[in-house]
Amino acid sequence: MNYWCKCDYRLNNSTDPDLVTLRVYSEKEWQDIVKGGVIHFDELPDCTVYMWRCPKCERLYVFEDNKVVKYYVLHDIDEISENNRKLLIRYYKCKCGDTLNCQNLNDTVRWRVYSDPEWWEIFTEDVRMFNPADIPPPSVDVWRCSKCERVYVFKENTLIKYYVSHNLKEIID
Image (cartoon, rainbow, N blue to C red; front, side, top):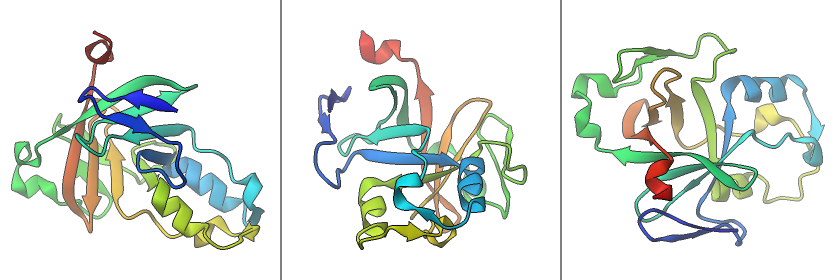
């Protein structure tokens, strides 16, 4: 499939692994998968959210049924005070003032986001039966504010990127 990013970069997911696809599981979805124990590779549920990340401008596009339903624009982390850039044990204060807390696993605040190359690296061997609990965590920790939909990307508990949800009309016009 092809899609043209707003920056005029042609996004394409036709290679294995591709450089644009992100597999997104909420922490609750992932815990439900892990609870099931050992499974066959073909039984691993598809993620409910597929995103593409533009390698040129880093916009994020959320797809459902091969249609973009939401998109996010990368913002400068300097907009967030240096004191607020650290992920505190189990919560983070969003720029909108809301507290992001993953103590409640029914919430979808914390996301497990695997790039396509990360996913392929996990399954490089001829894996048939495996325990999802043995899958290593993604290289980054991603949190989404359910109030304003900002997305925060942490590496080793330090904010490295953040995105703001934008109106789809911007990319249609």
